[in-house]
Amino acid sequence: MSDISPVVPDFLTQHQVAEKLQVPERTLEDWRLHHVGPPFSKLGRHVRYADVDVAEWTRAHRHG
Image 1 (cartoon, helix red, strand yellow):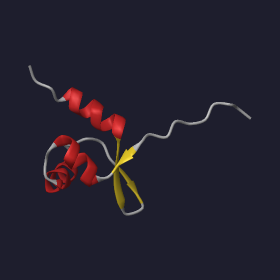
Image 2: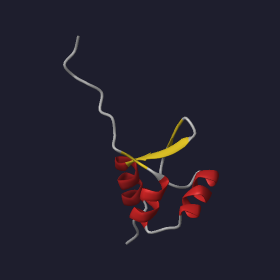
Image 3: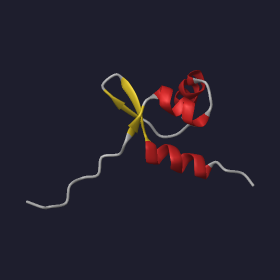
């Protein structure tokens, strides 16, 4: 057996991501519908965002 364990990202709720990005939760819902927002996972019926994915998506969408 290996000593290396898989890395599980820290997950955020839609509410937490909306607060972090300072956008309404409805905006995140629209982005998911149109496939333009940060990557997300469906865990059962729950939507979760990996903290690292949100940070990476934010960096990729910087202008200037």
